Image 1 (tube, helix red, strand yellow):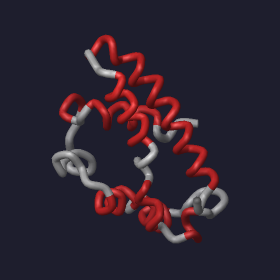
Image 2 (cartoon, helix red, strand yellow):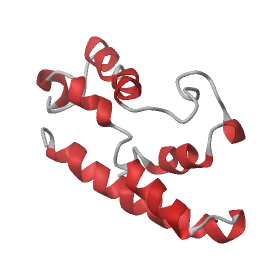
Image 3 (cartoon, rainbow, N blue to C red):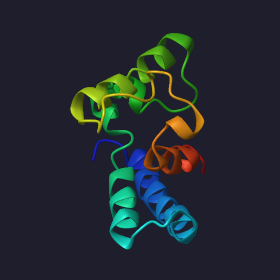
Image 4 (spheres, rainbow, N blue to C red):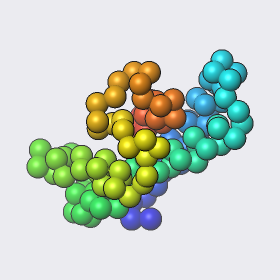
Length: 113
């Protein structure tokens, strides 16, 4: 609600996540409720941005190094807002198949135009 670009990104991530989850569902034996859950939760991947000051979140153009450092805190802010299934994962250092499938699906396209 504070940032139209982030809102548009969330909808795009939701649509792409649904497409990916639907495509991998038959191969991985995923149910339709799982696909729905992943696409719904994909909208929450940037929820920590609500804790980023508007001067940084809404800044036109590129962020400088200090601003980018603040922007990167949105992950920890999001973790504080949302409950993780097992309190592990990014930024705790999980890689590859150790990351839950839901997280890998959302992460794959979250920052793409």
